[in-house]
Length: 294
Image (cartoon, rainbow, N blue to C red; front, side):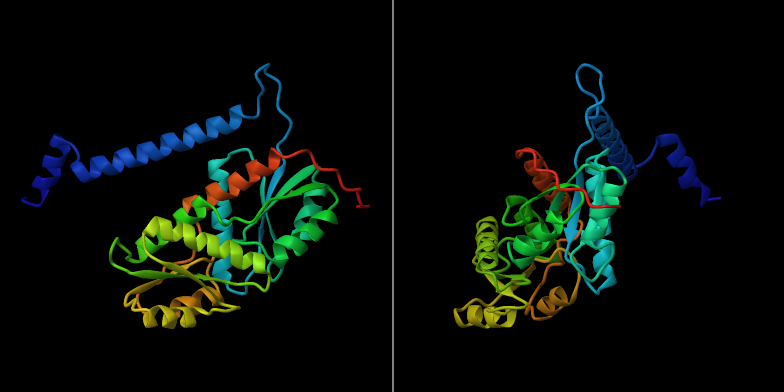
């Protein structure tokens, strides 16, 4: 009999504070989704009631990885983008290693009647892929294309890096330096971009942030040794990777203290993709490519 008393008490006095908070959170989430969907529908209609032209398709260009978690992470990130911008066609294309490959995605869009696409690289700095591979694939596509800049450096990228460090256990004054671990590139512009991201993160954290690389110098272990030689005893590793993979794992394993997770599906990443899409759609209209035979 005593076991039934709490249930009777709850039913007469209403849910406790935790249940009320959970209910309010779920209600707020539902209202946000409804508002977002309504905004997406209204954006398709002009002030005179006529339907607006279809927006250019957003094609997120990922590098590709042999790690299956990378593909699932990228797909989940695209789902976040779709939630933020209902009605916007969002597609995925890879440079290598995974399907769909970018040329196949662009060809499929052309066959579906899509006239224009904005390609947003899911890459965090300039390099060969951004400067050469993606523009060449875009130029060969059977539809008009625009190629956006890489995601970094940008304050939204820094916000995602900061949040991942906090999730890993970083708190103000708990570390005296950070190594920003990135993939690296032979292109000097890539190092410039990563260095700028490191400086923005240093400004956000209030501690020195040193860039290091998985495929170039300085490596993460070398950067950690250099910081230790300068008297930095507690150093965190910030993972500047979009998704899980070999490079992210190796850099995290070198951490003497905490290492943050890849940026993945952090909300700032979805907002950053849309920011670059919006910037590209406000540039002059591109010259349509000559259509190739189907």
